[in-house]
Length: 242
Ligand code: 13P
Image (cartoon, rainbow, N blue to C red; front, side, top):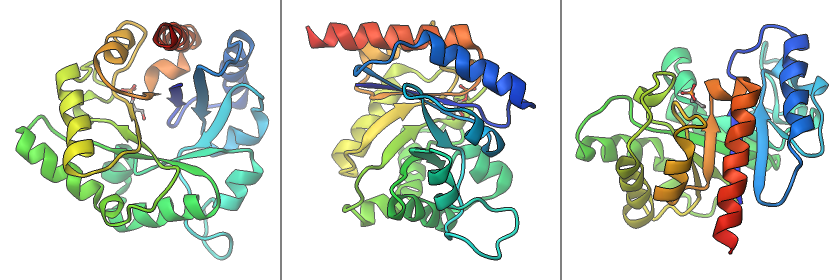
């Protein structure tokens, strides 16, 4: 199974466009057991986008169920809006909004308690030595290392220098990070890759890295491009079955 997840971030600016993107994907994706497709639209569009084939996730969540928390969206609301997944700890929330690990852990726990699968994002901010990368990643994933009993977490490795820059990460570096998780941190969750992913570079990453799929940003808003990525993932998954 290959996961193709689309993080729409703070786009598009109106429901009409959101529906256009969502239902174009929905119409053209046949739906099968080889590829798991989900999109992560802004909160306000969630209730208007519904499909059996294309799953939904939220980009963020609050850790309490309800109450006096102005501006927040609770896990119960996300469930009610049909969300199966939720991003947690995206680098844009860590470094633009200022979320720290304490907040991220609360959000992760809140998802798990409410049966939403968290997609926990991590990745180094800059191109530095691998020794430094390991320290940064270990810090970001500290609470997973301490609590090995978490189930149903998916990780998304998104090196910040690759996000929105066109500089997709080297496959050898992705493999180094995957091996670090498995062999040194003993973290064995599914891992997606994100960062300037498109239909031209996805095949190579699938072939060369032991990755479970992708968290696509910019390219997930371009329907033809996103559908092409899905098609490539389908072909790849089929070829693996033979
Ligand atoms: P881009 O694909 O636009 O680089 O964004 C990646 C990302 O941040 C997905 O969460």
